[in-house]
Image (tube, rainbow, N blue to C red; front, side):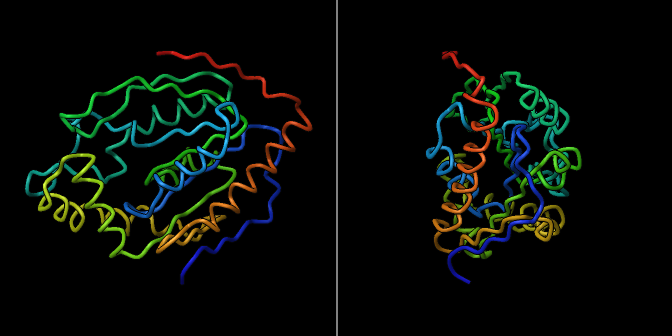
Length: 236
């Protein structure tokens, strides 16, 4: 199926607290591009995006497979305790500081990341539905779907360009790490999603509908609560 298809659950999730949205999908499904588009459509004080990718344990603490290759595609590769604690801080209106994770790319320089509380908090990553404590906090679950051949092409492009991985390593990880993790820890939760966005070609229609939903939430939030009670200062 081309384009985007969505299903919204019937529960009322506008309750004048931060709206917590979880966005997941297999590696290469387009989560990063989708979230980047959402971020560009809203002001800094309206939305906060917190990513699972910045909560990986150090390389020395990661598990290795039978061939001695580190497997980053396991739920245990993420510091889910810190991830959950920082999400709770944001929900309470507290600022969070986190060191960027650069995926062992020697050409990338890690920087300090600052997450600020906002009426809408987006939690994204491979395992955000799998982690029970995170999943229970989600008011809306968005699942990005794409065909496997497209996902592996996107994965190759990302890992070679952004993370400096050789092609043989990328293909090995996809076959023995990425796919097994998807089948076990990501795909089973598609039936729990409130919104499914098909990203085999374009996700614009799905993006427009999700953005429309968020704008409606912000309108209701401001109508009930008044101006957003958050103030921001540059940390750099």
